[in-house]
Image (spheres, rainbow, N blue to C red):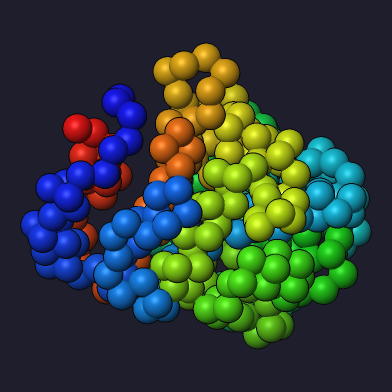
Length: 306
């Protein structure tokens, strides 16, 4: 891949036309901290599963503050209500790497069940879910795992996790557009439910590129950034860190070629560390297929390849 050079011909009307015609509500491409292309970047959109990386950010913030001592803490230790549950040996590392082995809350067709939003006793609901595989042995993308992570991290933080994250990280970065869909307890399940604009979401990408530093403040430790976005968290999925997915560089020891998370409907947060490039696309999940089949390759073709 050749070094990044932005050419006017690459950022073309055809590119924006393709973006707009696909139902995109917001687009922002940031290079070296500056926007190079945008479309309604201040429009707030429900980003679906792009909410999930925020639970990893919360874990990283707790770790950076010294409140989270180890990722190998067991759920039964953090949540005494589950101390005698078969899921008690599951660790935070298992949960953050989608390898807890806990059955996810999905129907027979694989569609997400949102019981977490309807119950006032989430731990009781979790206690009824069986273990389907030994913890750490099998990768299986899991909404339940993220929700359980948020419960455990909330107990460590001592306050609702979305409020902790907002207070200690998001507001420190000037992020103001975040809105959280809350359950009956007034909590976010973190596997979905965040609405945010492209400008603020791009700041998260820049934080990752900057190894956890924002305008001179070390909000997340460089060690956490490396652990969560550059190293496999699960031996059965070498492209998964701690919630974040990544594409390894072909250069040994280099940062990943791309770090990402996506959400249903066509929501993307793409991070290209080598090129100091962040790409955000937001599209409401209408239930209709996304006509823009491969946004990552479109970004690479338009803003990286020559």
